Length: 493
Image (cartoon, rainbow, N blue to C red; front, top):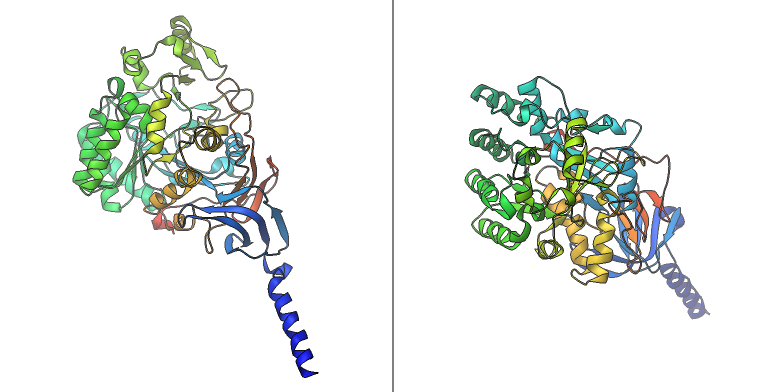
C-alpha cells in the first residue's frame, strides 16, 4: 500500500512539472514561436515569458501567463533599432511600428537642445526614441542666432540654405560650439551628429577636428555624413578615417552606399584596414535605392551635382507629389519651395548587395519626415526592414535570417552601448533583456511601400511589443498604449 501511495505522489509531481507554470507567473507569454537571438545564435521553437518590461524566460517548456500570443509558424526576434531616422512624427512612429521598429533614433542630424527632442511625443510615445547632439543646430544658433532644434520643424523641413550652411566659423565661434556640444552630451545626447556634406563649404578642418576631439574626450560616437565627391571619390572618407585614427573617436559613417556608389567595395576595404590598425569605425546602408534630402541642400547648389550622382533632372522626384522633374520644374520648386524634399534615384542594386554582406553592416531607414498621409515621404519609413526580410533574405538568399536580424538589431545595440548603457539590454532575445520584440511571418513578410505610395504598411509583421506591452496586434497598431521611453546618454543614466 505505501508503494502505491508513493507512486501516486510521484505521478502528481511529474504532472506538475510537465504542466505550464501558474498563469499569474507571467504578464505575457509568446508561445510556440521560432525564436532567433542573433547574439547567442539560438534558433529554436521556444516559449517566451515577459514580466513588466523584461524578458524573464525563454523556455523549451510551455509557459502560461495573464496574456498570451500564439506564435506558431511565426518568428520571434529582437525589435528593430533604427539609428538613422528623420521622422519624429506621429505618422512616422506609426509606420515604423508596423515595420517592426521598437527604437527610433535621430543620430545623423541630431538635435540641440537635446531636451527639446521628444516634444512631438508629448502625448506619449509608442516606441523608444533618442537623439545625438546636433552640430547643425548648434551651428545655426552660433552663426545665425536662430533656434532650430532639429531638422523637421512644424510641417516642413527646416531651412538648409542660411549662413550657417555656407559660412566658415571663426576660432571664437568654434570654441563656443565646443562648449555647446559638451553641454548636449551632458544633457543625454547619444553622441555627436554631423551633417558635413550639407556644409561642405562651411566646416573647416579645425571645426571638424574639434568635433572629433570632443567625441574622443567624452567617449561617445560621432555620426558623420561625409563630404561628397564625384561618383564615389573616397576623399571625404579618407578625411574622417584619418581624424578617427588620430583622435581615437568612435566613428559611424552614415549611409555608406549612397556616398561610395560604385566604389563601395573600396570604401569598405578602407574601413577594414583602419579597424585592423586599431580604429573603431562602422557604417550603415539602406534597403531602398534612392537618396532623399532637401532641394536646397548644399550638393544641389553646386553646378556639378548631376556629375556627382551620375543622373539628370529626370531622375529626381518631388517628394510631396511623386512628380518626376524637368529642369524647368526643378528651378520652379527650388525658387518657390526651397524647404521642399526630393528623392534622387541613383543607387544601383549591386552596390547595396555588396554593402549588405559586410559583416558589421547596420541597416537603417534614413526616413524623411512623414507628416501627413496627403504629403508623400519616401517608402523607407514603412518598408525598410520588411524589405530586407522579404527581398534580401527569402527571395534572393543574400542574407540568412540570423544575419539580417543582427544587422537590424544586435549590431546597433552593441555600437550604441558606447553612448548609453540602456542598449546593453536591447537587440537581444534572452532572459534579462528588454521586452522589445517583433513577431513576423518569414514566409510572407514583404514591403509594400513604394515611392509613389510610401505609406503602405508591410505584409507579415504580425505583432510588435515595446517595453513588454503589445503595440501592434495582427498587423494593426493598438491605440492608446505608450510604453516608449526617451533613451539618454551616459551622463543622464
